[in-house]
Length: 307
Image 1 (tube, rainbow, N blue to C red):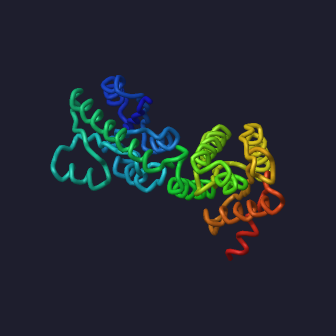
Image 2: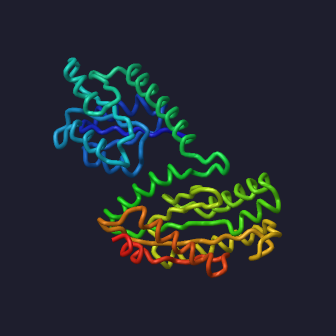
Image 3: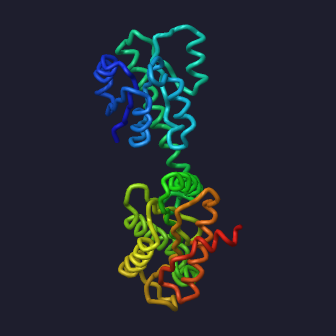
């Protein structure tokens, strides 16, 4: 996958020069001021930001401070580009959160070498991060990654005033499946369910993770209650169409799922725990009603109980 570099500099000549130096190494984006650079960074999530220190409207330190304070951007490495080459200036750049600095006048081989080094480091860190956030059995994201992402999405949807959806998915009578077919086949069943859920979760920002045991969880940005109900019914139908045999199930001769749904536009008091509590209660209701169905929970009730 091609890396992306964002150049933030108010000098068009410098942008053209650095773009020519780096276009063979990555896709190059640019902004001519700090605010535009922050907007592009949030939208594109570059692997590396080259940030001019001496800009007029908002200098590099101010831009870097906002990058470090933004949970969506703080892990993006920043290299300062500066005309100052003194020790104090270099220390100030590193103390501000930059991973490196490049001094002017720009040297093509130096710029390319430093950028290449940091792109390699980013690729290595991304690989380690992927391994740390993956479930070993199913290949889905794990509970740890989901917990990180739902916290970010609650904060983002709170800022935007948008509805965030959560779906808890449980494989019906999985213990009976394991007892009947054995644990090895049980693992194969979980992999098949995980693959099916992943196929149903493809919109930008959507996330499916293994929650624990035979439970999975789906995070659905910008999803109101009606959309969640349709999504839950679609999941149940899709799972039934797979026709995975489950001779021991009292519900159906094939593997089925129960789904608990919740949708909420978070306010300042809402937390990920409240969303999950509402989805969990809805899952309980789906099981109590006979399983193999999706039920939409009441997030407001969960909020009242927590209060």
